[in-house]
Image (tube, rainbow, N blue to C red; front, side, top):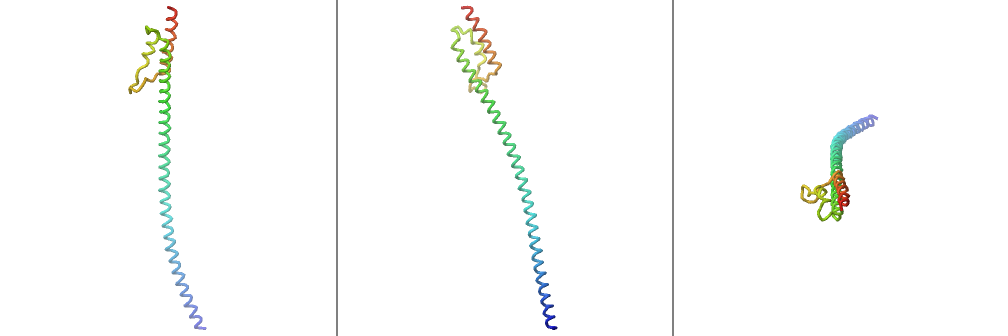
Length: 145
């Protein structure tokens, strides 16, 4: 029986040593996992910050794109108005007299643009003014004839 007790003590000692060895391994692995989790958490924070910056940048760029689009739309509108004014002047030119007494004030409104690439942009007010001049002078011309 003494041998059995001795064997049990040795077995208990070996099991205790094995348990301590396994606990040590578990502690090292736990420390490694915690370190890896902290590193992943830091990386996730960095990635989130980068995504925030990217989102802010995309928002800024999209705002600029909308602004440029609106400017292009306004330029296109002015171009269309200028083309309409040219077409209107060509239409009225057919009705101009040989002595040129009807349309010269209207022609004064049409000049080349500051860039020299085409007609100047006429405002709605300028177009109405020209139309008024034409309407006022046209009847007078016919009244005298």
